[in-house]
Image 1 (cartoon, rainbow, N blue to C red):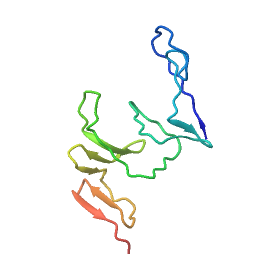
Image 2: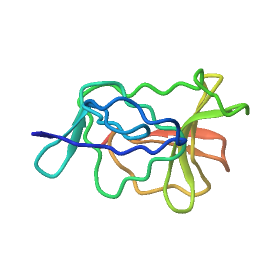
Image 3: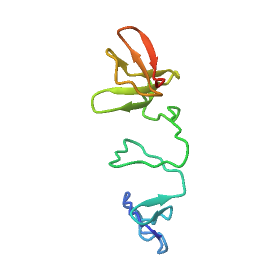
Image 4: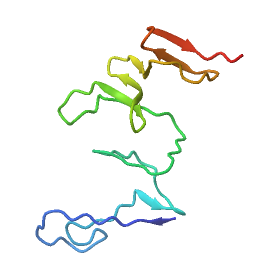
Length: 129
């Protein structure tokens, strides 16, 4: 692995002393490493804004979703949402409620599946044969 150099340009200030950081506004980030087709960090990574991923995401630890770190100044009603291109399939509200996509007609039966029928106001479990 090799260290990736990330160049950040800030406001121009007076020249600093020469050294490992170089001129003001340029630094070396030793927290990130380049592997074979990927980058990695052993530190916590915070993303402000959106993260768009094309391909798959492999996680080797639990997923923790929290709205407690909301710094955007607005209320977060849904803290976890799974969507396809047309519908919200599942969401977890900030209150802890799990909300499933509602169906008006019965989907294809599948063992272990759960669905909510909004016409009959009933839940169904797929139990196999």
